[in-house]
Image (cartoon, rainbow, N blue to C red):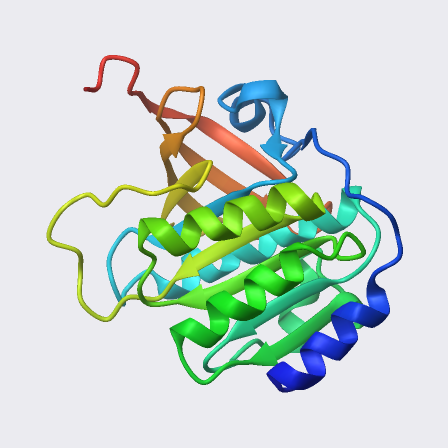
Length: 234
């Protein structure tokens, strides 16, 4: 773990790998990739992960964000940077999501503003595979700044929302995708967690819902079946 001043120095030390590449990286499940323009998650972009139920689904949402970070590591060089006000990751457990502890950098920020500042700095560093940040409030303007930084550095940004109070209405966002994640009970046929995942927003695509399984033996997503096609949603 490091402070923000040390993080700035670490990012500068990592830079030098050249400009990041755009494109997408696949999630590994055809149903998920088929719902995303280009057949995968946009690489040089920001993606939001929010719990379906505030407080109750914080753990499942964090697990899904870890799994996305693991897929980024499978397709890109360099480490993942995780920035939060309170770091409660369990290193032996994160490896099951495809994130080896040796490829994870952690930084603690004093508040949401510090988290967003660290993310913006890190997204401009092409030597990172992905950047994950935990914040309570995600308004459109700072997310737009993060999106511009991701495009400049070619790095994938994941925003994990940790609200204490549920939003009263749907909020606009500059993120390319927004994933709403809720827990589903495990079964004897699955080795990893199961989630109800709603692709609530996708730029250039249609919202969908899935029952997603994380196979921690192969480090891949699997989809049981689409829960609902929201093509007709307004």
